[in-house]
Amino acid sequence: MAAMFTRNKMIGWSAVMLAVQKYLSDSPGQKSDGTPGYMTLGMAIMSLGVTYLNLILPPPPLRNLAGSGTEAPAATPPL
Image (cartoon, rainbow, N blue to C red; front, top):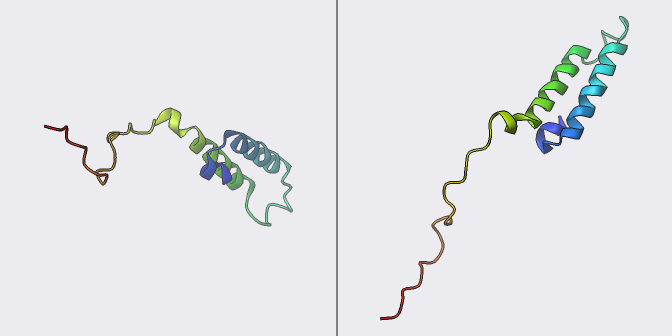
Protein backbone atom coordinates (compact mmCIF):
# COMPACT_ATOMS: atom_id res chain seq x y z
CA MET A 1 0.00 0.00 0.00
CA ALA A 2 2.87 2.39 0.65
CA ALA A 3 4.00 1.96 -2.95
CA MET A 4 0.69 3.44 -4.12
CA PHE A 5 1.23 6.66 -2.23
CA THR A 6 4.95 7.12 -2.76
CA ARG A 7 5.14 5.54 -6.25
CA ASN A 8 8.33 3.85 -5.17
CA LYS A 9 9.00 0.90 -7.46
CA MET A 10 11.33 -0.83 -5.02
CA ILE A 11 8.64 -0.93 -2.33
CA GLY A 12 6.16 -2.23 -4.90
CA TRP A 13 8.40 -5.08 -6.05
CA SER A 14 9.25 -6.08 -2.48
CA ALA A 15 5.52 -6.10 -1.64
CA VAL A 16 4.88 -8.43 -4.58
CA MET A 17 7.68 -10.76 -3.54
CA LEU A 18 6.46 -10.91 0.06
CA ALA A 19 2.86 -11.46 -1.10
CA VAL A 20 3.94 -14.35 -3.36
CA GLN A 21 5.86 -15.86 -0.46
CA LYS A 22 2.83 -15.51 1.83
CA TYR A 23 0.51 -17.00 -0.78
CA LEU A 24 2.76 -20.00 -1.36
CA SER A 25 3.38 -20.67 2.33
CA ASP A 26 -0.27 -20.67 3.41
CA SER A 27 -1.37 -23.97 4.87
CA PRO A 28 -5.03 -25.05 5.08
CA GLY A 29 -5.10 -24.22 8.79
CA GLN A 30 -3.78 -20.71 8.26
CA LYS A 31 -6.15 -19.87 5.41
CA SER A 32 -8.99 -19.21 7.85
CA ASP A 33 -7.00 -16.57 9.75
CA GLY A 34 -6.74 -12.98 8.54
CA THR A 35 -6.51 -11.79 4.97
CA PRO A 36 -6.38 -14.50 2.31
CA GLY A 37 -3.13 -14.85 0.38
CA TYR A 38 -4.72 -14.17 -3.00
CA MET A 39 -6.13 -10.87 -1.71
CA THR A 40 -2.71 -9.80 -0.45
CA LEU A 41 -1.17 -10.80 -3.77
CA GLY A 42 -3.82 -8.85 -5.68
CA MET A 43 -3.24 -5.71 -3.64
CA ALA A 44 0.53 -6.00 -4.10
CA ILE A 45 0.17 -6.36 -7.88
CA MET A 46 -2.23 -3.41 -7.94
CA SER A 47 0.21 -1.24 -5.99
CA LEU A 48 2.97 -2.21 -8.41
CA GLY A 49 0.67 -1.30 -11.29
CA VAL A 50 0.11 2.15 -9.78
CA THR A 51 3.85 2.77 -9.63
CA TYR A 52 4.17 2.05 -13.37
CA LEU A 53 0.94 3.84 -14.33
CA ASN A 54 2.74 6.95 -15.56
CA LEU A 55 4.35 4.81 -18.31
CA ILE A 56 0.94 3.80 -19.65
CA LEU A 57 -0.96 7.03 -18.96
CA PRO A 58 1.53 9.90 -18.97
CA PRO A 59 0.56 12.97 -16.90
CA PRO A 60 -1.01 15.83 -18.86
CA PRO A 61 1.34 18.65 -19.90
CA LEU A 62 1.25 21.88 -17.93
CA ARG A 63 -0.71 24.46 -19.92
CA ASN A 64 -0.28 27.59 -17.88
CA LEU A 65 3.47 28.12 -17.60
CA ALA A 66 3.09 31.91 -17.35
CA GLY A 67 1.82 31.81 -13.78
CA SER A 68 -1.37 31.55 -11.81
CA GLY A 69 -2.87 34.85 -12.93
CA THR A 70 -2.71 36.35 -9.45
CA GLU A 71 0.68 38.05 -9.82
CA ALA A 72 1.16 41.78 -10.30
CA PRO A 73 0.77 43.16 -13.85
CA ALA A 74 3.86 43.60 -15.97
CA ALA A 75 5.58 47.00 -15.91
CA THR A 76 4.83 49.36 -18.78
CA PRO A 77 7.75 50.86 -20.72
CA PRO A 78 8.40 54.56 -20.15
CA LEU A 79 7.01 56.97 -22.80
